[in-house]
Length: 136
Image (cartoon, rainbow, N blue to C red; front, side, top):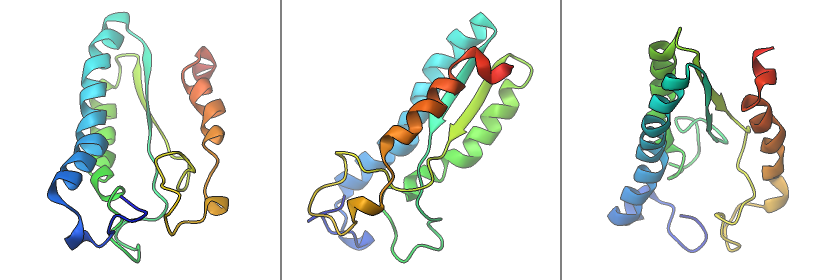
C-alpha cells in the first residue's frame, strides 16, 4: 500500500488489508510458534523480531495501513517473553525507529527516501542479538 494505491482506510481493498494483517500479525506468530519448540529443546536461543513504526498509529495524521496490523504483536511479545522466562529462550524486539527505505516502498509514493532509514542499520544489532555476546 502506497504509491498509487489509495491510503485512505476506507479505500483499501479488503483482500489487500487481509494480506497486510496476515503478513504483519499472523506471520510473526506462526514463525515464532515454529521456532520456539526447537529453541526450548536446546534450552537456549534468542527469538529476535524486527518491528518498525515511524509514529504511533493513534497519533499519526493518517491510518497508516501497515503500522496498524503490527499493534497486536506488541503485547503478544511481552506475554511470550513472560511465558518463556526461565527457559533460556529470550524474546528480543528490534525497533529501527522509522520507515526503512526498501524495495517494498514504491517509487511513486509520497514519502521521501532521503528521510527514510537505511535498512543496513539493522545488520549489526541483529547479528549481536543472534550471537553469544548478547548474554555476556
